[in-house]
Length: 181
Image 1 (cartoon, rainbow, N blue to C red):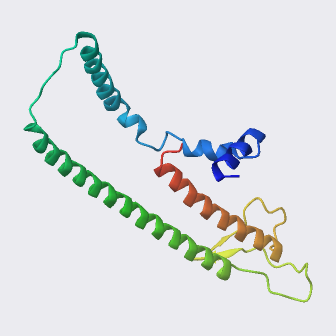
Image 2: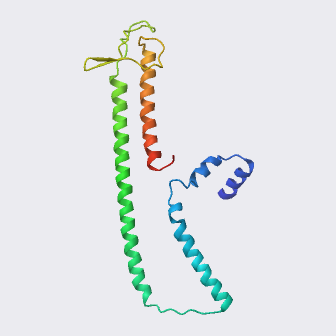
Image 3: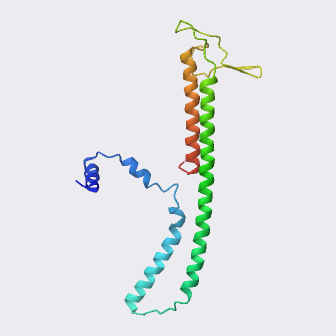
């Protein structure tokens, strides 16, 4: 069975993820709303001209002297806009790559250097409650940890929580830039 037919059969049987296809047709981050007015204007004008030709039979004749001039101007505009948009895309990609690199480095630093309890033979060994000391100030674990002492399990939970927040920040930045909400 060909691939296209197979995919139609999957849709009819309800075996596909329709949310994946809806994400492809998202309008929020696209230029569709920006170009809708000009495209409709040109479409209405072309429809008007075609209707007038069909109804009244008026055959408009225009010279071709303007076409080369307009094609050069439109070509220059397209080249300039294409170059500008690619520069913006490249800068954004470079900045987002730097953000991801910094998040990876920070995650590595947190995972390796955050205080862990001293490993003893006892799996439930407890340590004093100071999570981190910075410039003489002691930072405690977040309020999500029930007991005031740090075990290796609670330190791991705090590390994973910090890493998840960093990942969420990167995703939130991407969604904000694409105006997904």
